[in-house]
Image 1: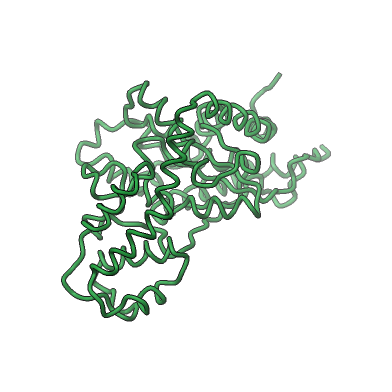
Image 2: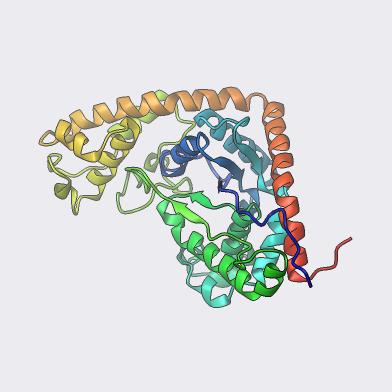
Length: 353
């Protein structure tokens, strides 16, 4: 049998990432991932998704979910993503995610999923009442990425374990179906690439303003623990002024931040927002009290985040325009995923019309 020469045999460098539309996106989402997204759309083919299928692993009120999808899209656009350069869409509009997710359910091993720390954290002590979707979430995340054969995934540090699983799933698929893949013209037997994480910047893991040992989360019961992208200037400044610190002055060197999680977090946030290394922040503010530093941090945070909130509110007032962006993005996403999924079906052995 002669090999099929597949038009997909060459891997195209491509970026994929996404966020859940549950609660307002935060400063942590912005600094942990979106800053990278914005930069990468200048150098890569980028696909950015509102992962609404992941959102329903925990029950969502339908009306609230629709609003949240649009608000997350508004956050993407207001933060600097360009729908003419990047593909922006919501996950549920492209069926390839669900179809490949099921195939990966049959490739991934239970032992792999049992090691996923985020399921343990989110399910808590009552794991028997957690949804199957929450348990299999990492397989769908792998499908999100590999439905486009993405090669790079800008993520926060907390998602690194899930991306490692996506690599394992891609490799096992390539191994399991190696003969079929090679018969289709892939000499190296690699249909899916092993996606690389992109974790850069001084604030890849932004922590709570109330507890420097916990990640800043949009699900935290305390709104004072986070800065929402929808917060106005007064709210931002107030939260920064009330952020937890310790009684010691800021150190002058990085080593002095050891064992001081709140100080470390605030210095990292300032460095990221001001686009300067943490060493330079400490050179400017080290030895001084937190009050002066917090004033400067409030100013730089307001200058960077408040305009995003204003633009989000403007965009959210016109839901039809947001829906148009999502429909166009979904069509462009399907154009990439459709031939990939057709070849996946052939490789797996499904009969197609």
